[in-house]
Image (tube, rainbow, N blue to C red; front, side, top):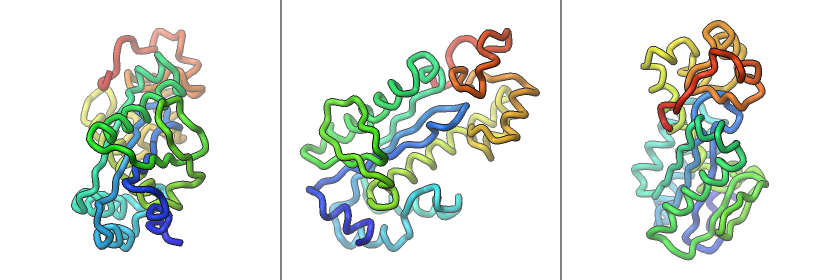
Amino acid sequence: PSLLDFDLSMPQPLLGIDEVGLGCVAGPIVGAGVILPDDYVLQQLLLECGIKDSKRLSPSKREAALEAIMSSGAAFFISVIPAVDIDRLGLPVCIDRMYREVITQALSDRRGQTILLDGTREPNTPYNLKTVVKGDDRSLSIAAASIVAKQHRDRVMVKFCEQDEFRGYGWSKNKGYPTADHVASIKRLGPSSQHRMSTKTLSSYRSSSTTPGGKGLLG
């Protein structure tokens, strides 16, 4: 069955949710939810656009897929949790908050829908939802959400690079993931206010005088 067939087998309307940035050492985590347009022709067009797991698309194809999602009339909802909150509250708490924010936005004007979440971990939320293993390879809604989340977060990281504090870390390419070049730049420059000091990669800086204080730019 196609990704669309999977979605249509569920009670409608359906909200697909995915996230990006959990493995990063800098920048926010971003969650997105997508409700496909209530029109089979438009849904089929999205399927034919090649929408699938964002990790399996090139940047140009992801951008084209995002444009198709936005122009289709799909509803999408985004939550951004900044690095300062991840350090203060812990990643698990922030993941739960991210999912709650996406779902709350979606339920504010749409009731009784099925909620599909990529992965196996059920967040601590008061909502009934269904986890789907490798959901971004099985559900068109989740795949669309993965694209919305990825493109939004990538743009945030690229925007940071316009500011002097963040120009030396290569975020326009590594997007805050702990690549060899990124780790080398942290050793050279020290961590910035957008680095997650609670991560293992930054552990040696936690009690250092180079540890940034105060809130990050999204805090």
